[in-house]
Image (cartoon, rainbow, N blue to C red; front, side, top):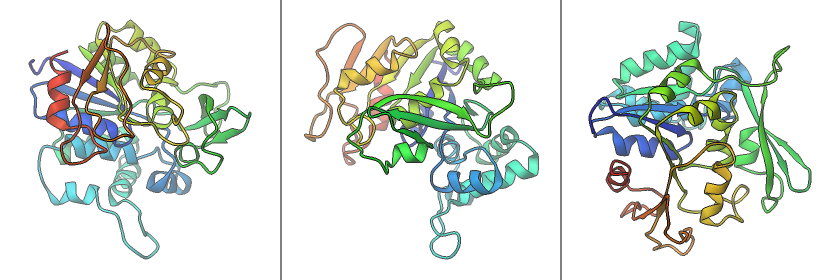
Length: 304
């Protein structure tokens, strides 16, 4: 591998930052393509009150790619305790402030990237303001990523389909458009990694943006899907390991699917039968059951 080897990681939440941290110490160029569907926590608060694009998943990616330890990096992960800002993220407020000062979300990310001296790039998948929606198996429509991620409805109901709506609606246009810089990054990619992450609220929202599936299909990059360690109530509680792959393949082609083979917890997904386009490997953190292991995962990905 060399610094001219371009890896694009697509996702959001806590999964994509773990992949970024795993690969950061290796001699590759990383681009994080981050969902813009987040509507919970500080991201939701700031979107509601200031009309900004969601900051939470971008903030996590920036911290993951930061190359220096500094008070600024610590601030990006700090949450206020008590008072009117209780549980609000200082990092998200900082990015929203930069967006207002610089005049654009892209400039805010660029400024934060420079200050944190990140290795690689962090790109919002779209610059449109979007709302994630889902239809459940009983016909119920759920709007807002946070209401899918933390269901107020019966979490045993299966998700039938998901889609994005422009929020507020844009006259004459029904679809969110791909960020042009994402198009360029995917075109230059040698490897495209999606996952791990919440299937319907962190991963698939990226693939619902017009132009993203088309760019991935057109790309000659190796397309890798990292399957989650376990299912999630309210999203994938009925899934087997191979169901994750089948769902992603509804949107994009997948060359290789990586499954965790360390099943020390009974709640972990049992991997499918080994076959073509399947890699089964121990990618589990030795100390934290819920996490993929950094160096283990990096070694698997860089030898595909």
